[in-house]
Image (cartoon, rainbow, N blue to C red; front, side, top):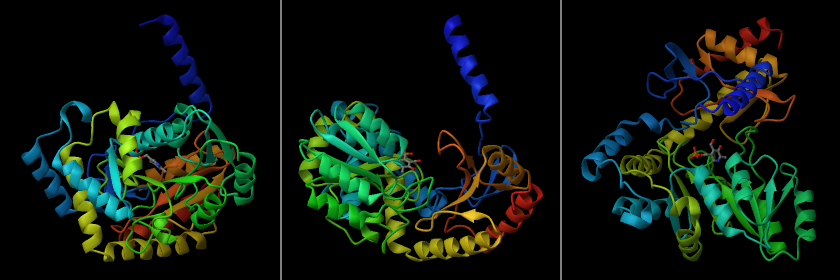
Length: 393
Ligand SMILES: Cc1ncc(COP(=O)(O)O)c(C=O)c1O
């Protein structure tokens, strides 16, 4: 081991420990359900992206197993070398129809989709206009692109318009936002963003990761929620949250944009593709979502119940437009202490602090699922008692 490297990483890790941002690894020893076993402890899981409980749905599991039997474990190559399977083609058709677009391209994750889309669709002479709170993979996409990036304050439409006015000479203007912001639990004002994009001849890229399977009448995401089908140029999303939870990502757009990404999107071209079991999981999740609309209804019932009980504790709760309920603590040490104490009591809610959110804005990020029972959500009593013991409320 190179001693300079060893010294460098040790110093960096020591700094993380001093700043109390060093993270212990956590391991699930059960399914990722509303109740789970985490590092040997039984917990109520209140920070799961498994919004509809589909990661453990019997039909979804069955389809994944069958796909391994039919197609094996994977294609063992990048798409260009040995091609994709007809399962890939089917999922492209299904996710494009789900998103109301002409076509789709599958990526190994939404992170790689964001990097591959943003990196490919904006280049030299273009400008990327990006919300301050966009997901890290969008930021990485901006870094990969040769375009200039201008960041606007979170959901600030006046500033977005100002930037669009200032950037009128750019060859292409891309506005890129998360549909639902994962740390805030709020949605982008897509109706206003689309109007501004039309006014200033910009195109739009929206990441539906926390919205697909959650928002909109059919659970198709933020675009459906705002009834803007056909008005957003590119949608990206993940199959690693509500839509089966096994991973994999997508980009949905017009036939021509998808064809261009097929030829130019580096994270698609130079990386292995979604394995058959994961594709089958996503296909089955889309089936269940369409056939069991009561899941979406239950998710929102649970969100309303949990939010009202949580707000009644006196804790400050953010969001309100998604199934993410950030418990806003502020002080970093207090947020992490609350998360640790809750885990001791059998309630798991992750704490997030700097650098994931700004300094002084540490929070616990609670999420609800359709799979939670009322009894699971009544863990709010433990949250209240624990927060009171720690002097937070
Ligand atoms: C908004 C957003 N986009 C993308 C991702 C990444 O998705 P994936 O796990 O498929 O890479 C996440 C996951 O945390 C996310 O919150």
